[in-house]
Length: 147
Image (cartoon, rainbow, N blue to C red):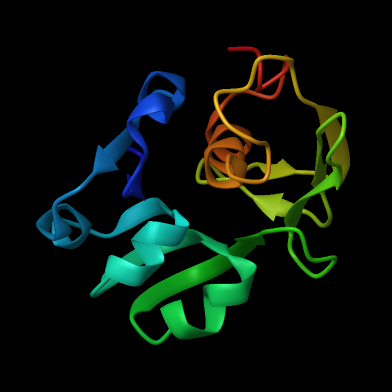
């Protein structure tokens, strides 16, 4: 496994990129140092401790989470202009990468926008942790959001 998402909603599980574990047991977080750890909003509330390379976390909760997680790099997501990963449009959702993001494989994701396909399993703002995982894990030779 290359990464883990803490408290992944069930409908997202089939959409997770290869190599990502959907964890519900806190022991999964402490098994090892994860190259990539994604936290859902619910996951930030239930998190005890973890160690990771890249932490994908809601921007408004990053400071609180960093008291419990050791991370080399923090990538925030949310609707604030300060978040690294946000949406530039809500009516026709477009994921916006605001700054260069590191990938666990050593590559990067350059600032750019990705239009999202129709038929998302939830509102785009709720899917930002899943979308971030796909950007950071999936090959960027094609659209990382083609389900």
